[in-house]
Structures are given as structure tokens and as C-alpha cells.
Image 1 (tube, protein in one colour):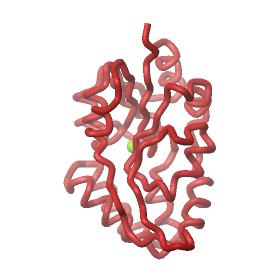
Image 2 (image 1 turned 30 degrees about the vertical axis):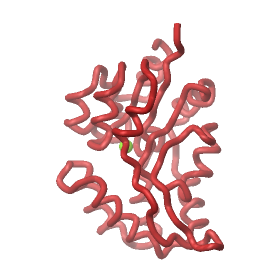
Image 3 (image 1 turned 180 degrees about the vertical axis):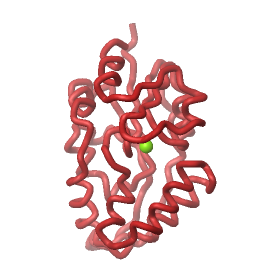
Image 4 (image 1 turned 120 degrees about the horizontal axis):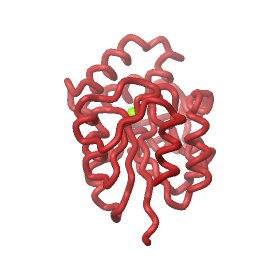
Length: 201
Ligand SMILES: [Mg+2]
């Protein structure tokens, strides 16, 4: 039988915190960031618009600093173990910028196994100049061969979950978005249950 692929959202699925708000916390922009993030999670402003606005807020932080902040964010370690053991079949699909998350992806064993938005830096790599491309999660997901399993928590994962053969809503870090729940085949609320389920598939 063909081996199943596993696709994961990053923020609040693999990480125990939302990445952009965590970065914002380091530069006293938590409040603006929180507002934009919450509104996007609730589906009140389009994800693309809110993502651009959130990235704009963070442009004044050097890219290496952002990477270092991201490296301090706690992860769901049991899930990371599963990913490392099954790395050939695992992929992350996230709106985050490549220049920010590349180190994290390498550290969880998914170098070259992730799809994300693309940032443009100056020639030193120190400063983010802008966004070259914001990932279209739906289009990315459609390019994956079936069967695949998808795991996510947010409004912008709803399409991915709906397209998956097994679509799992994960509520271990924050509440699962309603739009996602409506498309899910499973909902789990602890990391332990999530990993049990993934190992059975
Ligand atoms: Mg998420």
C-alpha cells in the first residue's frame, strides 16, 4: 500500500505558541499583533491581509534576531519525535516566512520538507525588505498526492483539513477554529492523543 503523507500546520500545532505574536512580544508590539492575529484566526479579516500587516510590524527586527526568538519557542516535543521518525513522509505547510523559520525546520528534521511564504532580505540577510510570495495553502495542498493526513488548528487550515483523507483538528494549544472543525474527520485535544492517532494511521 502507498505510504500516507502527513502535513502539519506550524503555529500552535508544532509550536506551543503563535510565532508572530511571540516575536512581537520582544519588540513591545504585542497589542497590535494580538489584535491582528485574533481577528485573522476568527476569520474577520482575510488571512493574506492580516499576514502582510503583521509582517510589516516586524520588519524592524533583524532577521537573525527573529530566528533566535523562534528557536526559543517551546515545541510539542512528542509530535516533533513523530515527525523526526517519519520525516520522509512529513511536511509542514505554513504561512510563515522562509527566512525566519528555516533553522526551526532544519532542527525538527524537515529541511526541504516545508512549504511557506517567501521573504526578501537585503544582501546581508540582516533585514527583511518585504514579502515576495504569500503561500496559498489550498493550492499547495492540492499538489500533494493522496492519501494524506493533515493536522491544524486555525481558520486558515480549514481548507487543508477538508482536502485531506484524514483531517485532524488539534486543540492542544488553543481552541480549534470552528471552520476547521466543520471540515475535520477527527478532533483531538491533547498532544498524547494526537500522537496515538497519528501512529495508528
Ligand atoms: Mg496554527
